[in-house]
Image: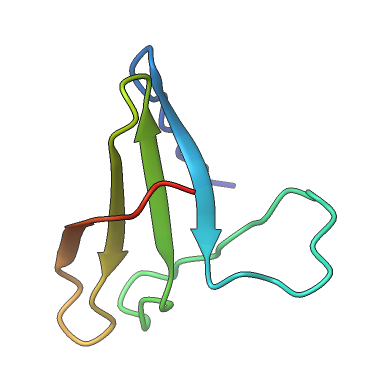
Length: 73
């Protein structure tokens, strides 16, 4: 059983995970990645204490991460 945990720096948090799930009641979400498999189309919006927001998505074709500014909610 392999698990990888990422610890975010102090002051940085996950604001939301895309795609949004209808009727999401705050339950934990899990993503399974298989070596050599297709990368799921998922995005993670990160926020910092100063109000900065960035959206990190992985291109499902190339596997390359894309970072863009996200509007604060």
